Length: 256
Image 1: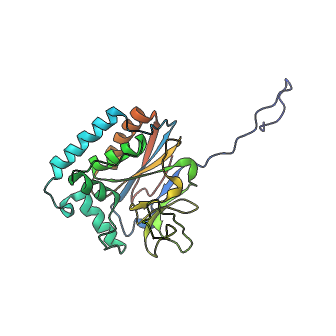
Image 2: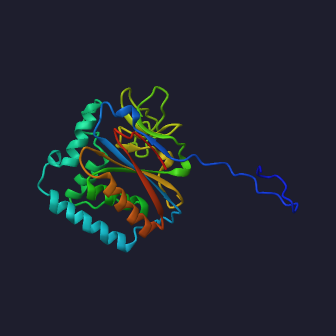
Image 3: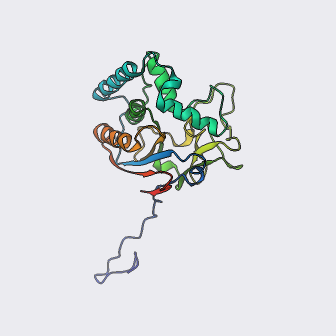
């Protein structure tokens, strides 16, 4: 029986609500050039994100910062396997400037320089802690502000991007360059240079109720372990319910 049709008692079934597309992630365009690329895509729902870092999460982050300094202190960034893997991947699509470094390299560099992870909100702080601990690139978007399907792919001529951290005097509407690897939804680019800088239109805030997270590796590190770690933190500190799947060369598309 169709929704909205009358029932025998004279009442009506409630009309069907518009369906939200299931998050789908594809890496099809990249598998030939980057066969070691793997990503876990995690969906977190029923979120209650604290605007400030909870004390217990602060303790956990401090522990991970200390562990990072103990493990990698005195080591050149280029000698850290997780960092070296991403430097190699960036060169693979033409990025050689040192001003463009992947997200996890920036986190590790700052922590080794005795700076703490940035305080954004409970959700972002948790995934930065996971990124630091596993030396993997992690990024997240408000699922209600993106248009699945999602893809890591090469930039297209009509791609748009709104830089969330554009420097003063620069144009935040700086589209990706030809051949650049990007993370995008069906409407626009969500992250430039693979995992360098996020688009401002889908950032995670305390108002976010559903989020999609990608945890990325290029031959070094377990995205499964990182996703399980993040799910545990988000369940504990943001009340989340989580599920995740993995994409890789032999399985380039996942749906949640």
